[in-house]
Length: 208
Image: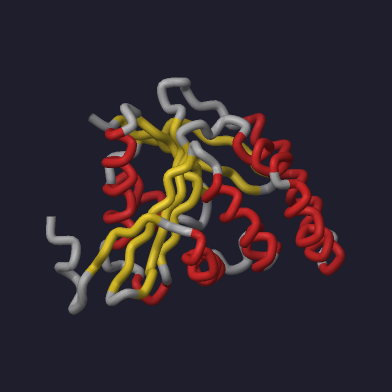
């Protein structure tokens, strides 16, 4: 597959390492302005993504164009209870950044509690233990096939690890382009659940 067909430069798939984290944060905030994790700030995101990077169950890759990181994904082979596990394993690193974020905006604490409680409503068949946690593409490179490259890379990695399916969640409302993107890529809608006032769609995909 010619991954660079929509680019004038060279596209490269790279494993995300520690020195990529600041670029990962920049892309995340640019791609998801106003979202909960973005609102928590750079310091919380830095601990969050470093924790994911160090977790043995995660798969973390990015795409570079002309040497610049333009998108990334992070997935988990064991997603059930992942965030709770990461938080308590890295609690000493999370405490101060979260404290400063909550002190600036107390509503973020309520949003965090809502998100945590709603996770119990997420029900996915055990045949889909792997989960796509996050996929981000720099807005400057949107619509150029980066998302497809990232998902194709994830599926190859899952095949190598003998996983035959995975799932993801995304907003159901005011998110038509994203929902259609996943449907076009072969995902099937598997249900939905509420996260406070948000309705989240659950998508699953079988891979061979």
